[in-house]
Image 1 (cartoon, rainbow, N blue to C red):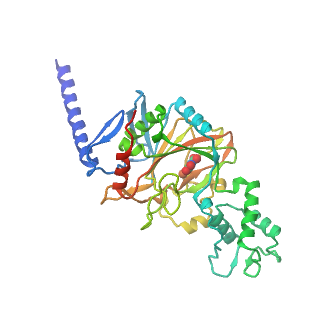
Image 2: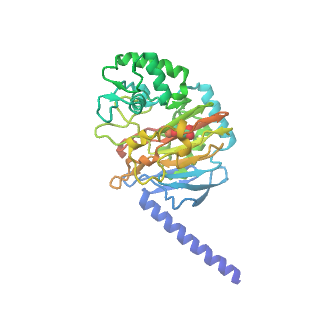
Image 3: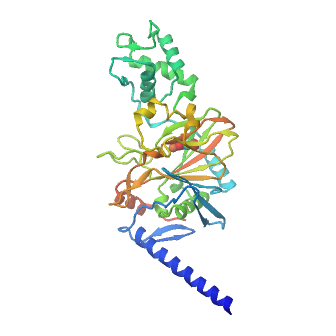
Length: 397
Ligand code: OGA
Ligand code: FE2
């Protein structure tokens, strides 16, 4: 009898705590319900983006997913906040995404900078009207998204006969070639050395919201449940499968962009006169990499960020300097890592400014190949635009 009483009291306390949490969640997140089918919300006005509380590094929260598996979500880092979930996907799901990407066909990845063809902007940092090796490397990095070493620049000077006195400094008088000639040289060089590019990989876009693929739908629901965001918002995500061979890498970058007044967020596939807006990144590792291919966060846990200094120190150059990154995550099949590219705007409850500490990239693969999927949860700064898109989604079959 005593045992029964104890059991009853425990149950009662549990229920009270549970209900209180639920009530709080409803108030905070706008009447949302969390089930195995993801999160559904019924009050647009109160709807706010969520940001899970990471607690401290090493903290773990457990949850059961649709197929009954118990998963652990571990806080890997707090600045920026990064979570890791081992076995988020099943082997079959990983293999499925690779198969679909292969069927669609993978093409060479292009970075935003590369496709924008920004051209030549001389980075004469000390305004001495001449370019040192460092300044020339930055010029090439900034304009063409290529990461040259000193030797590569010197080779270029020789080929183009730019530095007759061999002092490794290019004065105004010595800069005898046109920007077009320089671009031609660099384009030829990158064909022979694709690893000099900031991103050396192939990719395919998959369109989960337009597909009736049940694997996608299941994974979307799982993501919705884990990140506690409405399934309809998750369904607007972008999904990109990326593969790297040996020397494949992606130098450090942000997955999203700073708020710029008057510049709207891009729609999928249309990237001119707009900025990329991705509230969260959920990155899946789809295969076992024999060696290399970690995901690195070089600004993790730094006190502050000085972009120019970081570029001068070549912090972004993960192809060379991956070991120096303060947070590195190993690529392990089935694992997901999750981070927030933006903070929440307290006033609107929706996407606020970008979190620059999320700068990250893929370290070079040294053996084998690497397959990942980027599941980008996209939002606008203006909540009403997202609500509009969510309403237009076709109902799930
Ligand atoms: C990306 C990216 C990291 C990795 O594709 O945007 O950051 O580990 N990838 O491949
Ligand atoms: Fe990225």
